[in-house]
Image (cartoon, rainbow, N blue to C red; front, side, top):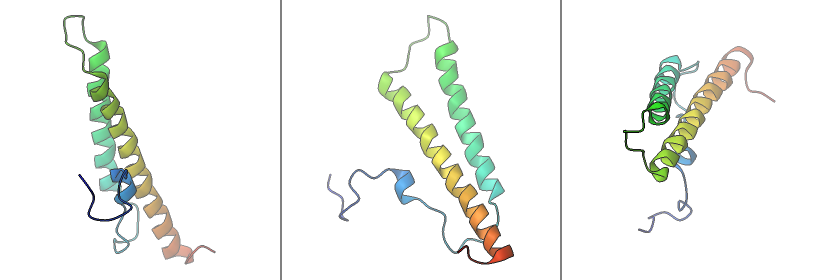
Amino acid sequence: MKSASKGLEGCLPEDLLSVCATNAAGVPIDAITAACSRVDAVLHLLMAQFNSGPDVERLSDSVIANVIWDVQGTVALIRSLALHGDKSTYQLVYGDRQ
């Protein structure tokens, strides 16, 4: 399937999703908390896969790899939310960074 826009091939969701510049200044703590809860839940599911008994069917390597990839993407999202909080809060107090 070809992308309608050039340059989007091979992009990851984290490459395209960002905090909207018109969002209010400050640390988006609810969004960060939700992202942390989601990544924690995914990690618990992954841990259960490896801590289960021998009678439980093992997930395929591709599923496990996608779980890890999801965690990496969520951590990138948390990082972008934290950076927004830092940048916007700094600007409120001190103005633009030089």
